[in-house]
Amino acid sequence: MSIFALTDGRLVVGGYDFSDNVVSMNLNITAEELETTTINSGGFRSKAGGLQDVDFTANGYYESGANKPDALLGASNGAEHIITALADSGVGNASYFFKARQFEYTMLGAVGEIAPFNLSASQSADRPVRATQMNDFDTNITTTTNSASQQLGAVSSTQKLYANVHVWSVAGTSTPTLTVKIQSDDNSSFTSPTDRITFTGATAIGAQYKTADGAITDTYYRAVLTVSGTSPVFKTLVNVGIA
Image (cartoon, rainbow, N blue to C red; front, side):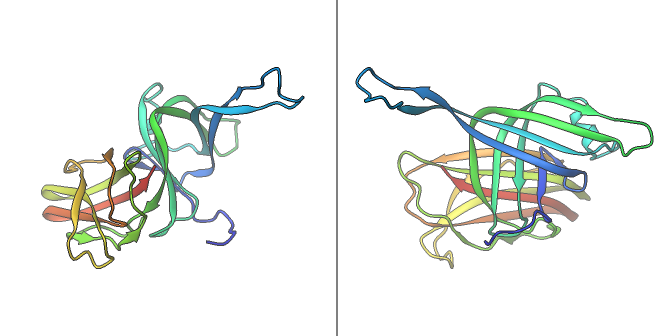
């Protein structure tokens, strides 16, 4: 991917797609700076990386109502969310996801101006994951389907396979259900796939986050999206990464 203007970024928080409301977002991934300088340093400092952290902020236009930002953020200070940010939406593009705790939500503003909102959250558990977008963000899932295969590499014995699923729209009758599995194989045609992660069947909006321990020698991965119910329609996003 070449250098680009930020015109197709996306933000999903739990079971809510904030993309139509956000005008800016910032993901700050840091490691604590630790001093390791000794008395025989030769006059130069030495340092090591300590605890890692993630700070996330987003700014946008306030909106209330079902599935709108205020419906989640207005009642969630201190709550944990699964957050995925994409600088450029598209299957195979990079995404970042992490578990975060919401610590600040501000809203409204001056008379006569568009009412804003601001979100501030920090990493709450595990680690941030640089991942790959597995399915098309804007395509409705109405039938069982497999995502395109992505060559993400092997998972070493000291690494994990990470995946998450966001569902922000569910329609249909007879309990429409979306069940997502992450499979791996040693070839892009998936002639002998192995199930690595299976998520709980989703019947309502929400998000899930799961891991699988290495080692995994397969290098290709795909998402299997299985739907059931009468006339099911889902809006969903699946991301997979190795760390």
